[in-house]
Image (cartoon, rainbow, N blue to C red):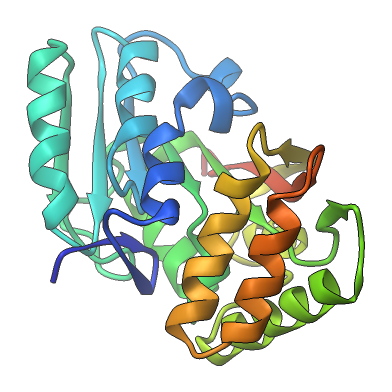
Length: 254
């Protein structure tokens, strides 16, 4: 299947969603976690997709490295090629976050972006991640939350489109408020010194940001709502801001 994996769900490649994912970098989407990283660390990036963030993490911890895992193998081939081209100690493997192909206490840090909102069993995933982390290792998570999208200008068409998006995401089993729950999940999974934070991603291009939702709406049969959102995105000065929550925790030493 020609798709890239976003946790439990697939999205077609060559879509606005794929374009947005390819634009992500460690500097733009893992900034909250970068101060935790040191040279020679070994990192695990879960739900890495195209690997655009993972490569930046590997750069950050030279001469250490990073392993990116994803359920879909298709984007991992190109990710491995890019790592080799840049001379980075990075590898990309097909793997399931609930059953990792690693031994106990292998990683100094774990990172996951846009993953936990799609997982059906977040605590199970966190316990498995904790297993492969060294004592004292950090975990850094970032997920969106549908409780605070900001679109300007606002009209009935935008409201209808967002309602349809919420219905669509819920039907897929997504947790629309996963972002605000990250800290709670980390504590429940046995991590300590958990620190939450939040930020907004403001789209430099409203058509690009909205295009991801438009494509999904059309695929799921919400043609009218997709059309309304597309018309909104074409308005001069249209603004699309998406809320993201972050949480950092630590595996106890004992």
